[in-house]
Image (cartoon, rainbow, N blue to C red):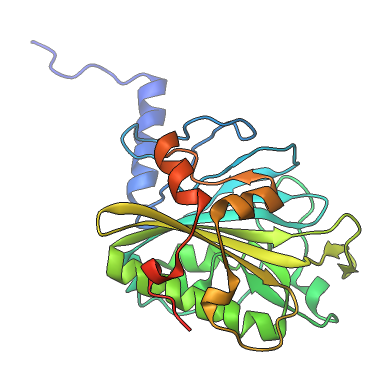
Length: 282
């Protein structure tokens, strides 16, 4: 009798199991799961599919220690000395911005971290909030994405008035941009001094300030905008007050943002900024 099916070898069985696990993952779309790249040099950063350039992933222009972890809804590069992220990056689409998943509200250690992870208790006796970098409001599209944004690798000590004030207002504005322009790329993180204040038994570094840079297409053209916030903003200011060029944020942080863009486009949109293009006014 003709044999139509050959026995599967071990490698094929392993592949099928792996593929099945991806299909039935609780996360609807893991954009960067199991993707690895060399950070620290300026080169095009590609996603698992060669056609999907991960525009949100930055590279360093200066040496910095950190482990890069790819979660369902965001990517984090975690600093083992500061015990807070160097940066957190993600893409937010129109569909994701309309998500209805409930808030998790339970901070946990990151199981993917190879070094010591701070505890939520490190913040308990301090004057600082557990400030999300990738906000829960941007992870309402999936339960796993929501739960993972409460990993302590996504958290920084943040002044309460900033966390609940103008930083939150920018998070809300980014969701409006995602709804209006279909998708937006976001990178954010702390700015830390040489001898920072430390909190908790773990000695978590307290940032002096925070940065956020955003990228999207407006009227068919790439536009980029940077923001800088002191970690003690007790008064409300218009969002345009915090605006800077991406080049300026790169100079302060030592990080190269949106390097996967063509150099001519990147250089043009990062050199200057115009809040009015983004609808920001007094």
